[in-house]
Image (cartoon, rainbow, N blue to C red):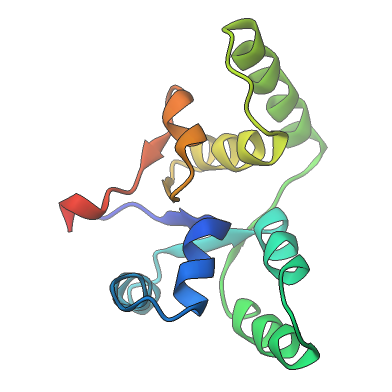
Length: 131
């Protein structure tokens, strides 16, 4: 069975810009029920919309994508992971630490163009070259 994929904001931006290669990949993953999103990514996407029409379209679209939830125990795990990373000399935005933590906890890959995820042990990255 193929891994489920937590798709990061950077990829969704390219998807909604209709970058052909990304659209094909995401559409195929959606067809096979492999795509997931989390509340933080939803919020990041919504903060970037330019019009009310874009906002409404985005809300309808993301409503159909399964979400990975986050509770108080997860935030404790995120804090511990961030502490460990900083202790190791790696300063990574808390938003990316959250996404990494949720992907590790839920045994998912991350599809992102963000370089921070490569710095976090145990994160499995979706690699375009393996398609």
